[in-house]
Image (cartoon, rainbow, N blue to C red):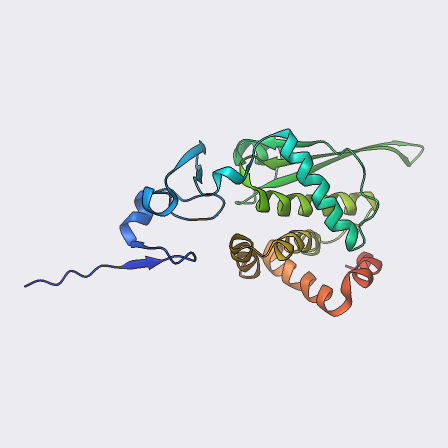
Amino acid sequence: KKTIKTTYIIDKWENKYHNFHQKKLPKCGSCNRLICKNITKGGYNISKNRNICNLCKPYAVKSKKLVYKFAKQVKKELRTIGFKNLPKNIPITLVNSRKKLKSLSKIKHVNLSGYTNYEYETLNGKITNEKYHIYILSYLHEIEFKSVLAHEFLHVFLFQNKYDLSPEYREGFCNLGSQLIYKKDNSELAKHKLESMYNNPDPIYGIGFKKMNQLLKQNGWEDLLINLSKY
């Protein structure tokens, strides 16, 4: 009599499946669940290498109306911690693929989900006109969309105030905006996203974020913003 040895995987959502399913089935780009009938009631393909499950689909941000609804909410959250003068009416464009986002931004980051383009004109050495344009991956779950947007709004703040931080402090600082959104939301998905942020080994987006988060814990938002030019 033979005993069959099987390796099971239990994911963050307590779903249990065979190891070979992981190689065969796509994963949801938002919640990271394996897309199949039993776990997510199925799902669909958005673009090459991007899929969304049917549990996240109702929350996918894919219209201008939702973009500006959530932009208002995010700005309101950021105002409560001291970001009071962010520019009004910044255009926010949804982009269908990471490939397009990477070609717009010239950023090589694997999981790139957003990018802020900044242009300015000068006259006699003084800046006379500034333009911001935010690009975000379409079909993100609304919680993730809001966290990416908060991150991009903090990039706008840095441009606006002429802070020239090192890459690790710049991205680490902007990730504090993402953390704020996830903490306020406090859903299971938000908790998983936070856990991923805290465990990210990337020297800029992970370690830089931990350094900035430590400074935030020690000093609070007001002090952190006053002393930002030091980093």
